Figure 1 (cartoon, protein in one colour):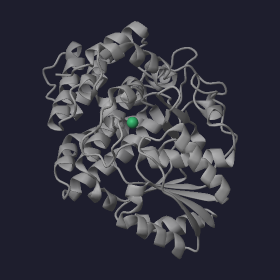
Figure 2 (cartoon, rainbow, N blue to C red; figure 1 turned 135 degrees about the horizontal axis):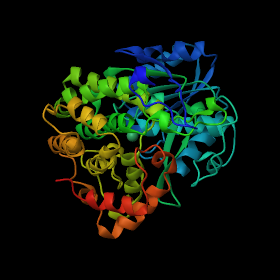
Figure 3 (cartoon, rainbow, N blue to C red; figure 1 turned 90 degrees about the horizontal axis):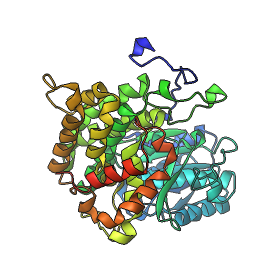
Length: 437
Ligand SMILES: [Fe+2]
């Protein structure tokens, strides 16, 4: 596709890409549209899905008032845990099924929105969770049809879950992160209100901002859509369809916003401009990765999160006491090692990312693109006081085999990487990622 500076499709590969997104409303005060919008979608009895922390914040009361003012029956579920598990998803699904709702509103971070997606799916088309979970962990069956209306209201500036069809959770038995990925899971609408970010703790701003950063870096450097084998039928192309001209637009803008606002948003809770900018960056990067897909840093992050029960890492600054690695932190820890290796697939794209993150690339040779980008990422990590590599969250050499095994199970993400990786390559990457500086 010469007009968009993407390579022509190879024989058997896809020559087209599809653009999909939830309807997005962005701006201060838009949370108050929740009630009328659900009513317009034909709902009369809705589940408000949230967690106890968010559910007690003043804006949760405003949302509830909006729902009730629109004449909606509201049942409330506030037992979502940070880092949801298969058990907690099934608990929410049972609640939705027994409550006989015909619509959903999720208010919270990615954990809440992902839980709501699963509750919607499992209460609309009841089955064991494994039935829908991505293969090889689950059976990977298709979602049978459309889900009930779901309006997602994010309260963190990171996951982009409000505009994607992915629900991530901890598989309790396997001690591994996995996901259900299906277009039908994408929320019907997203109400993205910057007013909610004022109450975010700095640690949450940092972790979610690093997630935004990596969504943009990975979507921009993913295998191009025209290098992915064409689906049969062609319109059944996956959400992880590879880098494409549409996702590039969101990635470039999001990277520039991360460069200018991420450190500011984390350092000063009263910097409303910076926090709004990061929420917009999260939206753009979410739409981008919902149409392109992420790759190695996210695949490796799921494995890193999966060993938290052994490392007992407790993130400072989080309103919780259980051991876990915040998603955005677990993703960025491997990113420098990954881009050093993936740059060979498309040095110009990697150099472009470095430039968008503020590097002076005028005299940089293409063969140095990976190192220059790695250094930009490390510079941002240090300014944000991120743990220094996976060793910083408790990983050691002993964990390398299980990290590799956990990553190999993420076939959807590995297939979207710009290079082919095997067990040995992953072991090298994890070894390099034990410390970043
Ligand atoms: Fe992410």
